[in-house]
Image 1: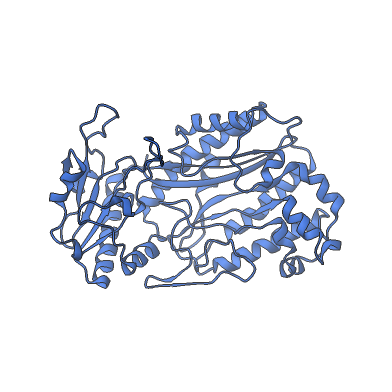
Image 2 (image 1 turned 120 degrees about the horizontal axis):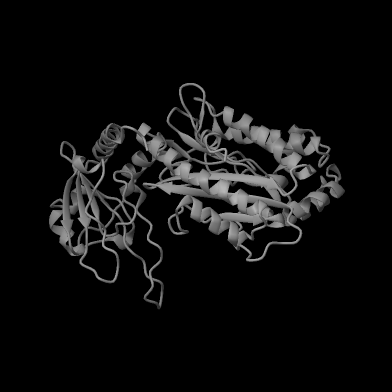
Length: 442
């Protein structure tokens, strides 16, 4: 853990308060009120879905399992936390608030959700209430003023040192899981078995992870969001793609690695080429860089690999222009990350709203902003052998630019994706993921 969480958190809270003050001033409102969220029940059933905390709430306090609580910020006053600690013998009751952040809040403990009403500001119409509709409590109905949401979400892209430290803690968990998953793969485990090994090493169950683990052997690596997890390994096992993260205090990491079962075969050589290209892309995370251009440059790098391995005959520029590279790399180069895996305001033109368009022909890019110090982004190039996209390419005007025998040789391996979380600074980027892999070489 970081040596001085108290100082990091105090400075982080000051930033949040300044942002909230500015957002409220723009909206001509007096208070920011944020519910933590509520449990949702499945239709025609008495079981609830896994609870997901309101991101606007966990930005202030590292609480992720406390439905029914509320945060109140009034400019010039200490923030207030209305903390629900119900009387309940069916479930584990949340502990009393504890930790480095507690001294910075006026904390009121309530035993029922309705008790919170007497501790919220007097007039809901003077408040920005940020949350989902189900969090409504009496007259306290989330109104999500757009001017407030736009301002707060835009500035969430700029991480405080406290947030970077939290993301490093999440990354430590994630890398432990990745190391264990690779060992399980090498030992012959199934997708399900690898998933269990990951969760055990990361110390988190599926509903604690920031997203569902993608554990893909062989051709399953060609399914971008593969979630099925076969219980029996294929025969033979050729390849392994794992896209899995971890959480810490509400912050996420997002890591992807790809391996060949045979470290000396040609698929591993393709993985190694992609890894080298991905490191070059990570090095391009610099102040002032247009993330859209980084995405297009990734296409050129991947098309270069495709040509070097004899998969296509087009120049990289022609592969990008004709869309041939998109048949092998159909998603975006990455996204912002922090409190949410796909962090918000990726297209925001400014803190007053507006959008920055995606490059034409690249509909799945999740971030179009220019990079600035404090931003943390993922860099995740991919090279896949997806039947549907390859069939479309083969039926199109550029089929002759592809060596289909070479493609067929790689199809059983599924695909490659390599992903790191990278912080933009005033100078060289900081690769949170590689830093931790260097530490954990076991």
